[in-house]
Structure formats: structure tokens, C-alpha cells
Length: 547
Image 1: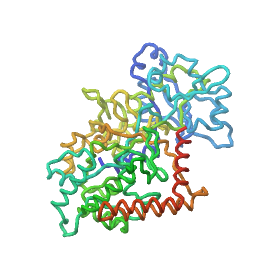
Image 2: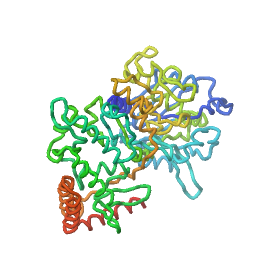
Image 3: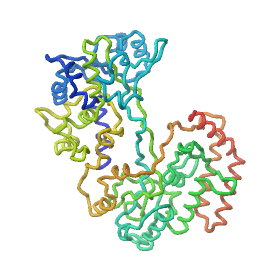
Image 4: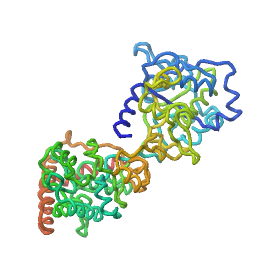
């Protein structure tokens, strides 16, 4: 199950629409909720201003809602802008693309949204009440705090999304030949590459081999190759002329040296790259070749490893992640979007709507939205972990496959809003909702090398391997430092040029003494060009963002 299929799935997911749901299994079985399920089937109007679909929900999802709540769903899309406030009409459940919009605010202030805090949320929305209090759309006025909805595309406060960029890929067939030596730190990693170089000094065509290769044109602010080592090993986030550690709230300037003369992260990794270069483990053409030239070396087994997934799209079968034990994977806090789900204050069925919304946010609801009906397309194993059935896998790869008399896609929910982010945690299993990260998502190994890698990692996939890695750093807000619109723009360009060119000189230095001298020259030249002013701007920027 290749990543390109995953990306295809996500684009389709948002294009053809889906979703919103989660209530707890406990809610469905309680007599408190059952008494609000109508004896005669009723139709609820669902407004969504992020869907183009209009009309009755049909297909398998209509069957699910009929079976669980004895309802039909009429989907109402957004109308032309000149027809007034979209939210101030008669609906039952309201799906909003931006709760911060003027129309939403006006409708809220005029009482068109049900104040959930005035209802018995614990009984009617047990799952939301237990897990999603951080996702309430709250407003406070003179009369107290009110809850007018639940954020969509949300997550739990501790949820993160792992970076798929810093994978430390390695030719696993060569690694296995070495006996799979343990790789704790950078020195271990370099030693493994050196042994590979000793065993395979040239490829099958007689061309020299290297540990890693890069291409020109990737650098900005600092040398990309060195930057990637800092990010991949320490988990620091690159920004401007340095790196930010969200754990310590510290900004490491690119040319930083402490009071004892010890190099900061960038210069430390620059020194490490120099040692790799002197062992013949860095492709000497990395500073001049283009992407295709570098990619060709990866394809032709001239390269043993890649810190980043720069060449992942090449699908080199022998390359698989081997992350040093002391490395920190970079991750991001999932947070939430501006989308939300509310209930119309004028609905005849407020308790029923609350129970439905709660279902939509439950593990069963979310998994059903993503993969189809439980029991037919997905289920839980004896240990409580989710898995896709044979039918579920088939529909994942082909949405047009027939299902209950029509294409699977035809029966999908038509709201185009997800209750959770795909990488949000399923509280029932402890795994993300994205099935590619499940322990039960096992595909046949494409070749002997992949089989050996899976045997070694005990992981079912690359995603599952990363998810089981305990060391990670959560990156910051994502706000990027941009010098282009500041009076420091010219100085930044000059400093950046000095750092990049001098970094390559330092990497290619033949001795430790010459390396240290080049670094000192780099610091002096960069300082004269305005380095300290630029770094001061960076430090002020990240401090304000943190506040």
C-alpha cells in the first residue's frame, strides 16, 4: 500500500465529500438516548456550506442512519451569497466551514444555534463530553459561557502528526549483510555507511558509491544538507537563520557557539558532515548537480542512505527506514480547523440531533464515515484493534466498486466535513483513524528486502514503524520567518550566501584545523554582513509567536 495511494485517497476523500460524526457506543445502548429515537422515520435537514451536494442522502450511509436513529437526511448546500444569511433558516444540524465568519457570528448572536450548555450534554453527548471539551465552540457574554458547537477536523490535545520527511532511509539489503548492527547515534550510523562503502566501493556499473547525495538549489538561509541533519536528529524546527526547540522554548542561531566554545546544532552537524566527506561518504557533486542527476545515483545503487525522503518518490525497493535510536522524529500538533458542527435552536428534535452528532464523533462513527459499515468494511479484532475487511480494502482502492446495488462512493456521506483529522487518535484503539498506521494493516512484502525489513522492525508498514517510535519533538505553530518584506532583506541574502558557500568549504576541509578556521572565517564574514541583526530579528519573531 504505497504512499501515493494514500495521497490519492486523501484527495478523493475531500473531493467527493465526507463527513462528520462521533458519539459513543454507550450512548446508542442507553435508554436515555433510545427514548429520543422516533418510532416513525423522520427527515432531518443537514446544512453544509462546504458541499455541492443537494438532496437526500442515499446508499449505505443512509441505511446506517436509518438503522441507528430511524432518520433520513436531507442535505442542503450553500445558496448564492445574495440570498441572505445562510445559517438563519430552518435546519436541524448545521455544518460550518468557518465558525469565525460574519454570518455565523450574526446567527449565533440572534439565537439560531442551540446552546449545548443548556442541555444535558453528559447524557445526550457522552463521547463529546468525555473527550472533546477542548473542541467546544465556546462564547462568553454577560450571562456566562455558552457552547454553540463542536469543532470539526479536530483532535485530542495530545494528538500529533508524525513527519514523513525525515525517515533515515537505508539500503536494507546491505544493512542486513552487515548483521543488522545496532544504530544508537550518528557515529553508529556513519560506521554502518563506512562498512557498506568498504563492501561496495562501486556499483554494478563500476561507478563510485557514497553514503548520501544531495542536489544544488535546495538551500535558503543555511545549507540544506546540514539543516536536514539537525532536524532529523534533534527534531528541531528550522526557521530563519536557526532552529527552534519547542520543548525547551529555545532558539538556536545557525552559527551559535556557547561560552565554552562548543558548537551549536548547525555547526555540530556541519562538523559531522565534514567527517563523512573525508570518509568518502558524501557525494562531492552534491553542491553542483541537479535533482535528476542525484536521483539517478540513488536509482543506480550509488547511494546507501538518505536522511530525508527527498528521493522517496523514486520507489527504490531496497531503501527502508532505519532510524537511529537517539534521533528525535519531528512531529506537529494536530490542533483543529475553523470548521464546526452545531444544532439549530429551532429543531423539533434537539435531543436526537445531539445524539446523532455525538455518534458522528465516536470511533464507530468516524470509522464508518471513512471506511463503510462496521462488520462489512471494518471491525475490531480480539485485542480491540481495528482492521479493514476484504471488502473494506477493495472499496478503499476502488470507490466505484458496487456495494448494495450502487457504487460505494455513491453512498458516502455528503457533508464534506470530517469530525476528526485523519491522524487524530481513536480512543478505542489508541491508533490514528488513518488505517495505514494500524498494526493490522499488513500488506504482502513486495520483495525479499521488504520482508526482511518487516521481520526486523516487527512493523506492518513504514507508517506503523514511525508510529511506534517513542522519540519525537512537537514542532511549533508553523509561522515562518520571512525577511523579504523587511529592511533586513539585503543583509539576510548576504548572510545566507556566506553561510551556504562557507559551509561547503567547511565540509570539504581536509583537516580538523582547516575546518575550524573556515568556520571562524564564516562567523566573521557573516557578522560583518549583518548576521547579528538578522538573528536578533529571528529571536524576536519566535518569542512573539510563543507568547
